[in-house]
Amino acid sequence: MTPKAAQMPVLEAVPLQKNPVRQSLLGLSPVALEDIVFSSGLPKFRARQLWRWVWRHGLTNFDEMSDLGKTVRVQFSEMFHADRPAVSRRLKSTDGTIKWLLRFPDGDEAETVYIPEKERGTLCISSQIGCTLTCSFCHTGTQKLVRNLSTAEICGQIMLAMDELGEWPAGKPNRRLTNIVLMGMGEPLFNYENVAAAMRIIMSGEGVGLSKRRITLSTSGVVPEINRAGEELGVNLAISLHAVRDELRDELVPINRKYQLAELIDACRNYPGLSNARRITWEYVMLDGVNDSDEDCRKLLALIKGIPSKINLIPFNSWPGSPYKCSSPERIEAFSRKLLKAGYASPIRTPRGVDIMAACGQLKSASERRRRQKRGVAGQI
Ligand code: SAH
Ligand code: SF4
Image (cartoon, rainbow, N blue to C red):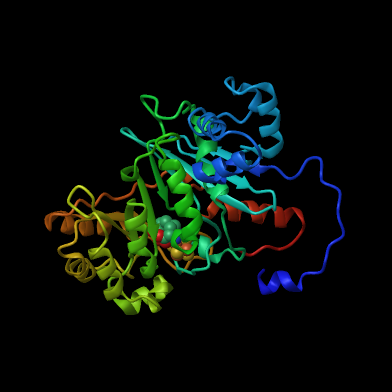
């Protein structure tokens, strides 16, 4: 007995609830599901059948699970659900980008964005509501409310997108959703357990079966968790670098005050499984007159020397009240050319879904602003 349990008052017997709260299947690993099913008196293979219906076929209705007998279906429907997060807004851009603003039962909101490209379709998912970090150029960092998303809430974003994109059964040819990036709201390495559990579920061959090569985790530089993500999940790593001098990075990406550049670069150099086919992506937001000089470019090259790398130049996405401006297209081009000359692929990320505020954190803030206006509160974001 734990000391806490010892202090607990003795509760009077309460009648059993007829319909206890149903558990979301979207947060359960195959083993956890087996255990629950087994302890409810059913054989383990029932859990495996249920798992396939949910993760391979995307079913949410137990009546459609044709190889389960009627009694088992009823029992499962009383124990579980596979509900998707509620969508409070859905926007589709003229370029095909889709953005969902999701609302969880507690009223918290997060964003998911689907970006179709010629050869692939990428889903950008959130790992937290808001973010505790306060990167000075990032809109998510200005939002006050912060909590971790649960495993089910992280997987729910993917399930919702797969429903809408007609991706069931999972793994069929000509998939529209081929890649996942953890680049939405939040710092995934501050919610490691739930992110890892969700990615394991999504990678499971019995379910969605997305390869670890098609998943990219982006971090602002939570150094102690980087190696673990590589060892345990083997996903691709992206680093929000944005500055190549500690002094400037301390300001742009304040976690740098805790884990300085030398330490971060070291962790990246030792990231498990790095090779030319599996490179680190360095994200670098182009801020006019702040981090976009030729000197910055030289320092960047020196910093990442010897590390298999791709560099992603991101035109700064401005938001109301932001202290920065995006570098000019000519400056971004010049920066990119220098990187290319040094042998690095450095695609300039073309802004997608500008007409639907697809950039991280923007739709949520717009929605909060609208609600505040409705309530007659003069809102400042
Ligand atoms: N917290 C994680 C992942 C989410 S942010 C991280 O920081 O890596 C995803 C990417 O978008 C990061 O590289 C982030 O720095 C970048 N970003 C945030 N705000 C931006 C803005 N206003 N314009 C351009 N890129 C931005
Ligand atoms: Fe958080 Fe990433 Fe935004 Fe920084 S850039 S505030 S770590 S979401």
